[in-house]
Length: 284
Image (cartoon, rainbow, N blue to C red; front, side):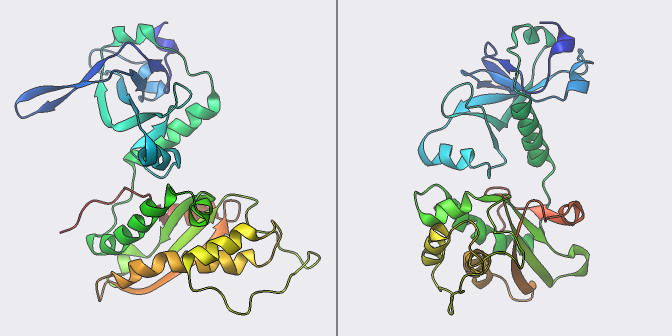
């Protein structure tokens, strides 16, 4: 395969090691399952001795680790399960290779998989740096997500319907900050709005338990108007423990909101930050 035909997402099964550099010199990292090309196509066309292609290792995950990575909420991993069950691209194990190793590339023919990989690369390396004080809150929310997302439960099925979690705040205006956590659902999960649609009787009292709320969401028909208040209640309950674990004087207000992908505008996307299950550093 000619170098100028290599594209991001192509698979190099014969590359069995990559290197990093420590204070003691080069460190070898075995890549027994090969690597995937991460460099952008425009860089690959100019690959040279001073512009080496960057690749990430393919790793095999099992059990809850695979389920969490498969959910798409761990920025460290991107799915490579078209290569084998439990196979993922590991952005935590990356390195440059010489251009002659590109000759053994297996082309990624699926444009959608290539697009998804590009999005995962962008998310991994352009994450928002939350203020340290706020991380204390968000880490507790992340722990809630991590502990529930891989289980076979109504709560996990609800979390699986999330397209993304976004955090809105005016970071130049604090502390203290007012945070709005937006639960962005996939299109078609919330019922359409309209006066001509059936409006069933709403619950008089919303449940106080997360599992019960998730079970009620599970039981609703697709156009059931109860889905709106139930999803809002679900988001509130999931965030409550994070609010309780916070630091006084850091957050003056904490709200949640539920919407879907089509209604979450590009302007709001640019003003908000993504929240994944493992993208916060530890704070002492």
